[in-house]
Image (cartoon, rainbow, N blue to C red; front, side, top):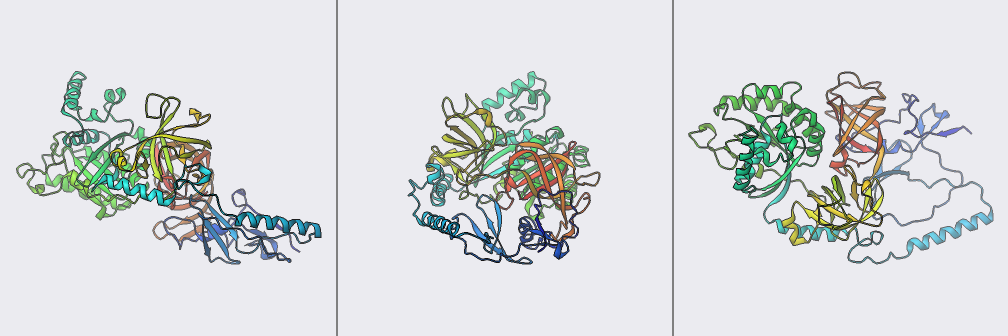
Length: 606
C-alpha cells in the first residue's frame, strides 16, 4: 500500500505545484466573480506517489457503512459540480461560507469490536431521534436562538413593503460626489441643497457673513457641508459629508468625498457605500487638464468608483461660467473624458453629461436660458439626471449586516444612558428595537434599543427600523457592553447567520498602477469600507485573462500591471468580509501602496 499524506493548500506555501494538473481554477462558470468548482474541490485532496505526484481524491474504504442520516440545514443550498474524479458537492451558506465535502460516505474504522459497534448504533439512534424531534415554536416570527432578534424572511418582506409605501413614488439611492480638488464639489452640492429647500436662507446668510470675515467670500455654500473648523480654514473637504435631498422620484443620500489625494482612504469609504456617482469637473482652462493628467484625482476617483462596483455616473462639468458657456470647451472635455471612462469599464449608456455653474446655481434645478447657453437650452438639468438614476435592489431578505463607521458613547442617539450609538450603513437585512444582534469581530451579543434611519419619514409607516441601503444609527446595549469593542470596521450581524470574519482570503485582483512586478511577499495596504490594514500576498495562484476570465497560467512567479490574477492574501488582523457574490460591499476592496492605488479586488473565498 502506498503512503499518502494529506496536504492543506492554505498552509503549504513553499512547495512547487507546477506538476499539479488537477489543481487550478476554472472560470467558465463565473467569468467575473465567484468560486469555480475546481477551486472548491481543491479544499480536500491528497497527494499519491502512485499517480506521479498528482492530486487525487481519497479512495473509498474497504468496509462501507451507511452514515447516520441527519436533517439538512435549512439555509444551505447544495450544488453538485462536475470535477475530475469522484463527484463532489458544494454547500453554499446564506452568509457566504463555502464548505466542500465528498458525495461518498465518510471513511469509518475498518475494525470495530462488538461493544464498539453497539455503542455506535446507540449513538446513531439517539442522533436520529434528536434530528427528527420538532423544533421549538417561534415567537413573533423570531429565531429561538436570537430571542426575538432575527425576523423571518416573510416578516422582513412585510416590513419593507410598509417602508416602501411610506416613500410613496420615490425610491432611495446613495450618490457619492467625487472629483479633483478645487473642482467645486462642496459649493455645487451646497447650492443645490439651498435651491431645493434643504438649507434655509437664514443659514446661508449667516455663512456668507462668516466667510467674509474669514476672507473667503465665495465659500458660503461650501460651508453647508464643510462643517469642521479645520476644513473651513484650509478650504478643502477632509471627511465624507453626508446630506439628503429629494427629487420628484428619488430620495437621494449624498456623500460628498474629499478631492485631495491625501484623503483617498476617506473617498474609498464613501464610494463603497454608494449606488451611483456624481463626477464634478472643473471646466476652467488648465484646471481640467491638471486634474485629468497622470496623478490627478479625476482619473483616480473615476477608476476607484468603477473598481468598487459603481456603474452609473453623472458628469457635471462645473464652472462653465469661467469658460463663457463655450460649447467647444464642453465637447472637448466630454470627448476626452468619455474615452477614459470607457477604458476603465463605464458603459457609455450609463454615463451622462451636463454643464453647470455651482456658484451661480445655473442648470442645477432650472434649465438654462437660451440667451445664456443656446446650444443646451433644452437639455436636462442636474436634478433631472439624478432623478433618472436607477436604484439597485435591496437585500432586505438577507441576514443583517450593519457596517459601523463611527461610534458615540454619549450625547448622540436615542439609546439613553449606558447605550453605545453606532453610525453606519445597513448593507443587508433590517434591524429594529428589541432585536438581538452579534457584534463582530468582538463576538459580543447586544440588544438594539433605538434606531434612526436616513429614510426616517418612510420608516414611520413601518415603525422604527433601518433597512438595507439606509444609513443611520443603531443604539445598542447589553450585559457588559464594552465601548472599546465598537469601532470603524465592526459589523452588527445576525446571531444565527453571523458575518464571516477572517484574516486570510483568496481574492481576484486587477493590478492598476504597479511600477514593478508583483511577486509572492508583496506588501500593501488593504482598504475595505472604513478600515485599512497591512496585507501581504502569500501566494500567486493563477493569472487570468481580464476580458474573458479564462485561465492563462497557473502559479505565475510574478504579475505585471494591467493584469488580472487570483491570489491568496494574509491580513494583519481579522476583518468582516464576505464573498462578492453574497455581498458587494463586503466583497470589494482596494490595495494601495505608497499613496497610489495599485489594485482592485474581490473576495472569492476565505
